[in-house]
Image 1 (cartoon, one colour):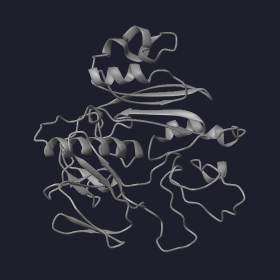
Image 2 (cartoon, rainbow, N blue to C red; image 1 turned 45 degrees about the vertical axis):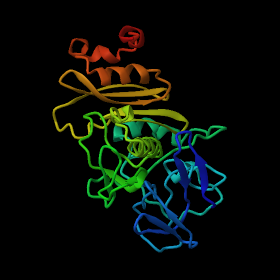
Image 3 (cartoon, rainbow, N blue to C red; image 1 turned 90 degrees about the vertical axis):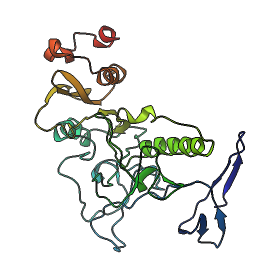
Length: 299
C-alpha cells in the first residue's frame, strides 16, 4: 500500500505507512520494500498477536474479530451458531460465552439464543482474545502515548499503558480503544511539535465499549466485572428473559460499573452515575426497579 501524505494547515506533514515489516534506525523508518522515511515524530500502530492454542498449524485459525475476517458469514461467540458449509472437527472455547467481556451470569442470558432462529441480519460480534495482562510484552507508553525512546509514540494493541489509570478505566485490546489511543497520540505528537501542552483525553476517564452478541446490544461501562475491586463490592441484577440483562457493580454505595444487554436505554444514565460517583445507598435494590423510571429521575 502506498503511503498517504497530507499537509496540515499548521505546516505539519503526516505520512501514514502500511508495511508488513519495518525497521527503525536514527530517526529513519526502513520499510520492507526498501523505502526510507525520515521522521520528526513517529507513532507505532503495529497491533498485537492473539493467543492461539497452537502456532504453525494450518487447520487452526485465529480471528481477532469479525471485522478483521474476510468472510461472507458472520462469526458469533460459538461456532455452532453461525458456521455453515464447513466441517468443524472440534472447537475450543472459554468456560462461559463472551468470557472476555462478561461473567457467566450474563452469558447464561444469551444461551437460549443458541436454540432460537437466526436473525435475518446477524449482528457483528467483536470478540478479542488478546491479553490484558500487565507484563504482555507491549511497548510501555506514558500519559502522552510516548515510549521510552524520544519522539517515538505507540497506540493501540501494540502498547501497554504505564500511567496511573483512572479508577474507572482499564486497558483492553479492543478496536474502539485502539482508535481512541490513535486520536490521542496524534494530538500529543502535534502538541509537542508545536510546543503546546495537552491534557489527558476524557476517553480515559471511564471505560466504555458497545458491541453486539446474538443481535443483542451490549454495553460495558467502568469496572463492569468488578476488576480490581476485591471483595469489597456488591452486584445488583435485573433480568427479563429474552429481553434484557442489567448488572450493576456497587462499592460503598457508589456505582463502579455496569453490563447492559438488550435495549435498556440506561447507558447514558449509568455513565453519568458512574462518573459523578453519587452516593446511591439510599436507593438500594430500587435502583433497578423496573417500575421506577430512573432515567428521568437522575437526569
